[in-house]
Length: 156
Image (tube, rainbow, N blue to C red; front, side, top):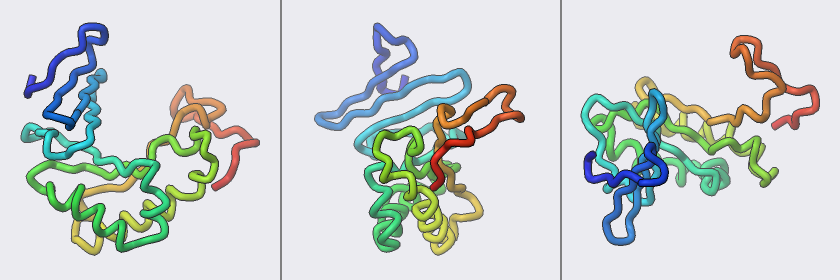
């Protein structure tokens, strides 16, 4: 499957390598998660929409340096769009569930800078900005329309 090798122990996990470059593909019921250290190794078939992740380690730079955010978006989004249908940029990953509490204040300003950069490049109408939130921050998540936050949750 597109040069990926299926993991014998985990049938929903595939791996693709090229020298020191590595990409994992994880299949979900209705989605695919691609994780890798080289965007050139990740080949996406036409018609597949992807979400590009700005990892937690880069949140501080994306928050405090708009020039950094511009370079990151140019390298990781604009360089591939529209050939690759990039639906969104996921800023951070489950920051509120992170043991590094200093990250909690970073997603919103980083998202603001990413959105401003997308607007500057004329991509804000096509590429959305979001931040994955761990369901563990909710007091109740079912049914989805009745989800609530605990009254003791930390504020950003």
